Image (cartoon, rainbow over all chains, first blue to last red; front, side):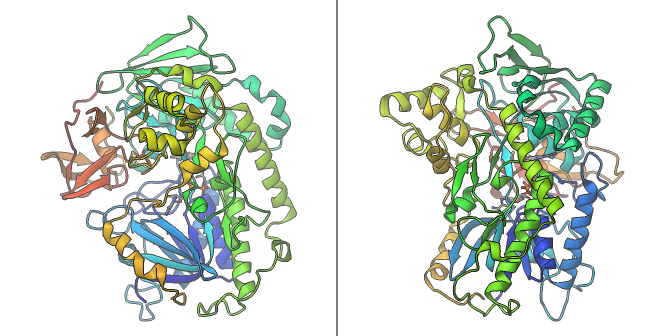
Length: 536
Length: 99
Ligand SMILES: Cc1cc2nc3c(=O)[nH]c(=O)nc-3n(C[C@H](O)[C@@H](O)[C@H](O)COP(=O)(O)OP(=O)(O)OC[C@H]3O[C@@H](n4cnc5c(N)ncnc54)[C@H](O)[C@@H]3O)c2cc1C
Ligand code: FES
């Protein structure tokens, strides 16, 4: 049936985790479909300029060789038809039905304004491939593949920058730190002239380094934590020596461009009438309390990049009922076993959604998830190439499947995870960040809900979690569905610097529609959700 | 204000923004072209009338919405600038390089 792709394994996301998962699944014999909201593979880490305009040369990138290897294998599998690649579409709904999964997708950019394919079709498939196994032209796919069916699902949707509101953070010129990174990588330009990068975590370093290397001025990098916070975790850090090397590389760039790096320092206010002009900075104690008299004005700044770690994109795993937990960085993440399988049989997760840990870990997790998903698909149906085969009987337990990683790679996974936990503990969201706000500070940017309104709903109406705050104040009800303010609102609801509860974070991650869709797409849902057909 | 890169040497892409001619380097998004071209905001909020432009840069926050060729609510950070596109903001755009 046209408009429906049916495969053994569906992978959502073509970043480090998704690319690795797709390649591993296909090399384990599965037929795979990969859907990604971006126009070309790479995800956040390997984001690059449109391939039809500028050949990607890996400048400003790390692990580019890993990407090129995955990409070559990905493209080879596309050429044989073993991977069907659906770029430029967002999954807005995922359902678990009939022993398989159904994904509904919508174009990321309206088809009438999207450019034609930026990724070349697979070499060996002529546009008029008589078998019609897979449309060679991505634009055609973008318009046609609205529904995806697969026996097994691997979700690798990644994360976005976590934000803490601060007075003036809604001024133009204030961006997510990763947003600046993405801007430079995707556009080969800078979003301004003189930058301040602030928040916490090692990710601030590559952002500042990329700005400087692209010709921008970095007035300061402000880190709320301090190197002292790493002392209890030096063992974990020593387990990943490449991180130390990377750090030395940034130190060299910082020295070359004379970038001031200040620890235990935060931006307490962004100033300007209609755009960013300056920031007020302050020294903070380990809890994030402003040290009196330490405020300074940093003028002539037109872009501020904030990054307080990352928030994994959990709406799809949550909507499918996958078990979650709160990680050391206080993010809601999905629980997986050693096969990267979630609490929902047949649903595998890899990358930042299982705990923020960086691209190298995402690749290893993706490999495990893809191989496990393929093994599961074929274990259930030896004739896995035939989608008519229905899943019968119980799935074999995970430990009955062959190991997906060599002992050496398994040890790397353990080391990266230890490093990530240490990083989260050394770079916490400061408990007292809410003290930087005034009652007028915007918390929910979409619905323009202020800190004062949230405090009132909490104190007068007992709205202590994201869900009740939403109904009383509309915080989290706008276009972004609480993606930007969800963490902050959960903190403010808990009050007094308390950590957000898992229930509140989960309520904030519950989004019936993972992307905005048209009324037409919603209406078209009706018949297929009620009829139980065979998968394509 | 930073200029579209000339590294590729390819001619600039011409589109219109609020009716006036605007340029992007090939492959740039509409949002990037606007910001790099000295327009940090092109939308005002419903309640407070506050100016907005790019924030998350990756399609998550919806701060950057524009109307493109008559299609409303497109994310400027994701739409690639193409020759002849007609881009409109809402409310008053802020123009003129900040520095
Ligand atoms: C803006 C940004 C920039 C970053 N830059 C760097 C960097 O320079 N260096 C670094 O070390 N780390 C960076 N990171 C951290 C990043 O999380 C990496 O660790 C890495 O990219 C994670 O890999 P991943 O595969 O888990 O997810 P990602 O790379 O995020 O890939 C996920 C992919 O899934 C797609 N997707 C998500 N939801 C859907 C959906 N519903 N439907 C369809 N597709 C979907 C996304 O478009 C994306 O292409 C960045 C993060 C962000 C948010
Ligand atoms: S800048 Fe956030 S969606 Fe475009």
